Length: 244
Image (cartoon, rainbow, N blue to C red; front, side, top):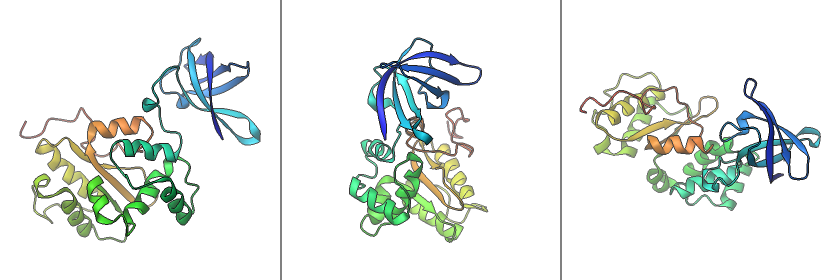
């Protein structure tokens, strides 16, 4: 169970990323910099979200400056990550009941933000949700059994002809990531601000959202979307498009 408290940063060692904070009741809790929204300062007033670890020991899962708006806090639960997506108009029919049902069907706890893509994949493949919601949210995934050319055709259909300028089958590809790289090159070349963004997945599963790069950066910073940033055309500093 997670609880929120007010605290002061009593110490922080920048060289190793670990520190100590003091709760209002005098208890001291260790934390590391990976739980912090921004690098903490000694003596700083913070809000901290605590969770009981092994043996009941408290650990800080989120440390942020006091008074930071809730909308800018990183998501710490799957339910919160889904709410952040829905605030962006995405996955609007994925309510609490549906989330729990999908998690049970998938055999996962359905609690951590890292499970979001697994739940979304099942959500968008659901017969009730179907292509309508999938097309509205521009979500696409590939489980390994689908042929690469079929994935390319599905992606072209999802984006629409106005966003893709090369004929189907023109790209010389070896994987679905190659297909996505080719489409992103075309989006960049025509000055489209969107990118097909590879999300963090396990095994052969691949999943993608297509949205403005600035939106992806924000959702990634909020801990909503895990993004594989190693693909081309996914950084704001990339070269200008050919027709710029």
